[in-house]
Amino acid sequence: MDEAFREAPYAYSRHIGMQMSEWREGYAAFDLPLEDFLMNRHGNPHGGVHASLLDTVMGYAGCWTGDPERRQLCLTLSLNVQYLSRPKGVLLKGEGWKTGGGRSSFFAEAQIADETGELIAKGTGVFKYRS
Image (cartoon, rainbow, N blue to C red):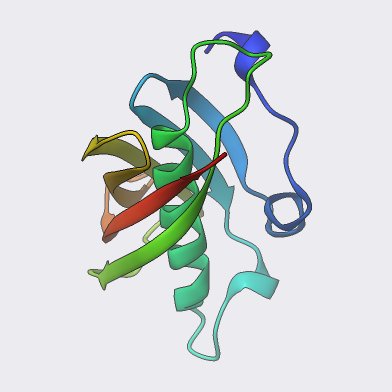
């Protein structure tokens, strides 16, 4: 990843431990180490953790500008999450892809796997560009 495009984590992502690992045209990836405070009462990552990671990678995937001096932001209009499995490992790896859209909005899809390759969750979203 070109370090000129690496953004400092915003407060929430820093709080839960999300770390950008890749960002380019139409694609973004973030890693999230699993910590005790992210787990639900069953010892699995809380569903909101999955949703946060999916939302983040899809939003970034659609907001690439190719210019580190020109930031594009977006708002989530719709977020759908499919919970598929529990992690076998200790690191969630989220990947998001912009799948379409126009001047004012875009569509994206994403998935989360762990470092063992276990597919944990998938998602889709609709996002509106902020001016």
